Image 1 (cartoon, rainbow, N blue to C red):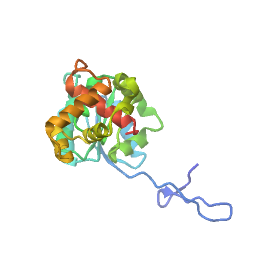
Image 2: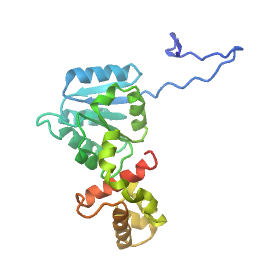
Image 3: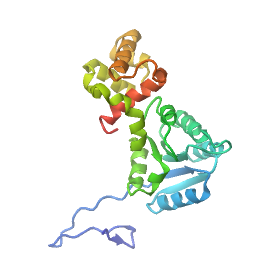
Image 4: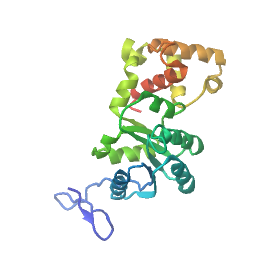
Length: 248
């Protein structure tokens, strides 16, 4: 069990058998966090959990408009957002997250949902998945949740295994990335960084048409045919396959 120095509020260094001080894991970086959920009790419990680890909850809101205003006002490190929020309880939270992603690229986004739906993750990760998380609400009670919060704020990504399983089921056929050429892997890596086809063409000093050919080949090799929800969703699925192979 970790001992704490009451005067300093920090972990007390552990001493070895001969009196020497052993290493102690550094405390988590305190984060400024906005919480958005229309369930007051859930919101309050989550705020208490986060603050118990030294994080500061800069705002607690119950609808998407208030979320946008709170983020603009406080510019937090992370926003924890329920996908379904008033007034319609449909996708207001998701749309607010997409808007925040466009206006405040450096803010981490952790979306919470009662159930898994592919379109949620596809919209949020259309350009880049860094600093993005999507978890089922039941995972908040998981012992690793607080670690997940820190990783997302630091620019990593975290997706519930049920979410990934649903999204990537089709892409696991035909050996996944093993069938891609070196150039196709290079293109896919740039796609994962959020680059558009023209930007990839500039990076590789090739034509946009050449990039489009590589992208089409990637879709085919990953078994993402034309009829699988259109290019928008195929691009997201291809990027997620790439990221999963590298554990985000």
